[in-house]
Image (cartoon, rainbow, N blue to C red):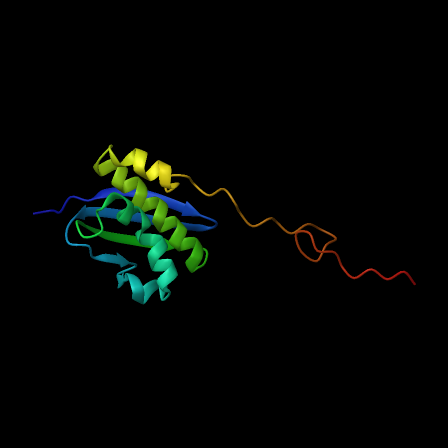
Length: 130
């Protein structure tokens, strides 16, 4: 018998997370590793679990996610958005709670590109008067 998952995508900075949600007992795996083995920081674990805590689904669903691109912080933000979107697909009543918490908003901040004639996006090369 094939298991049925709810699928959602989350993005943050250059990270993309594909999230699969199904009824279960609270097991979260990212890239086939346990959550804390993958992110290694309690703060990032807390960020990822925020939508589950807000809706009271922390021990009622299993999550299988695949994150790529960016760093751990960007991937954690992408996972948060993906989990929130998957929860809304599972039950529309969660939408108002998650919207109020700001979990359904895609963070638009990206790294500014480097410009020509500059050391970075905004930094200039050292100025010499003489």
